[in-house]
Length: 188
Image (tube, rainbow, N blue to C red):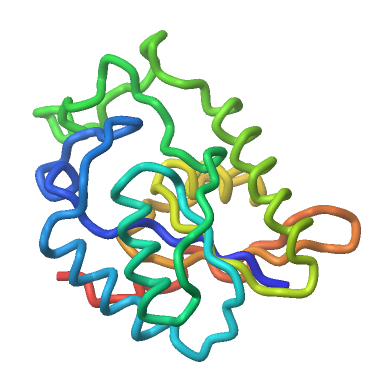
C-alpha cells in the first residue's frame, strides 16, 4: 500500500510569496493547468482512492486529478487542512533581508498539533484502504511537517504538485519512499 501526498497547484498567493495557511485562496490559471498536467501523469500508476483537504486550492486540484484519472470526486479529509498561520496569513513569506519570516507568533498553529492531526488523518486513510494505494491532495506545510516528523530531519520545501510517497509498515510506522521526489509538472 502506498499513500501519496501531493501538494495543490499554484495560487496567486504562492506566486507572490504570501503565507496562505487556512485562508481559502483558489488556484490561479497556472495552478489549474498544473493540476491537469499532473492528472495526465498519474493515469495508470495504480492509485485507487483520492482524498483532499477541504480548502478550495487542494479540492480543485484533487477534482481535476480525479476527473483526469478516473478516480472521481475526492473524499474530503479535514485533518490535512493547511497549518493556520494566524495573523501572519497574507504576509510575505520572506523578509526584506532574504530570511524566512519567523513563525513563532502565538496565533500560529503549533507544529506538533499539525503533525498529530495530519498523521491521524493519514492513519484513517490507511485503515480504510489497507490493500489499495491512496492519493491525498493537501498543502506544503502539512507535507513538510509530516515528512520531517517521520524522518527525524528537516524535509525540504515542497513544490506545487510535488509527490511524496509513504508506505505503512507492519509495526504501524510510516516509511518515506519518495521525498518530494519529483514535481509531477515541470517547474520554471
